[in-house]
Amino acid sequence: MAAAAVGAVALALAVSWFVTRRLTAPVGRVAATARALATGDGTARTHIDAPGEFGDLARAFDAMADDVGHAEQARHRLAADVAHELRTPLASLQARLEELRDGYADPSARRLASLHDQTLRLSRIIGDLGELAEAESARLSLHLAEVDLTALAGAAVTEREAELRTARLTVRTLPGPAPLLVHADADRLHQALGNLLSNAARHCRPGDTVTVSTSATPAEALVEVTDTRSGHPR
Image (cartoon, rainbow, N blue to C red; front, side):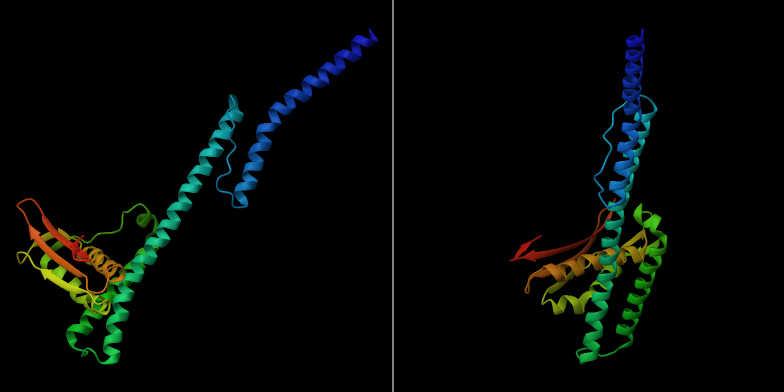
């Protein structure tokens, strides 16, 4: 009887240890994964596929970690996009102000008004930084109105003219019908065209040609920015 009692106690202890380990191991793994995430390991996951509440906890934790990783990637993309959006008008402003400073251009009312417009666009971009939720989900505010696409394309070329000339590029404009009216946000279109022209100034080779054209069909209006690499259109 004494031996049976000892055996029963030993069996009970073994079963209790096994059950406890089965219950606490998933919790320990979740805790270890949480510590790894806190130290910067964005790839840490529990990888627990267990039934019941512990399995639900582990799967919910892994889903949360995935969401955090996606949010971090979106934040990095947003920071890169903001830097690009600010760099483009600043580069144009710098080039045109250097021309005025060095005496290569006269400080005419038209040039000063163009520089002022650039600062207003910069102010609007900076204002968008206060709406990070809209920026991240591509829901930036739009101010829609009737816009002359041909005139807008010409103004964008004029504002980037100094930057393109500094890069020793030839710029051609092929205006389409005037006025070419579209229902759009003039500042956003101007911003997009400015980005394309600044990209051309940074990445084209001296002597390349940048062409800006507008055209229309019965169904749509089109503005195109093309450049040449070694004489071939792109």
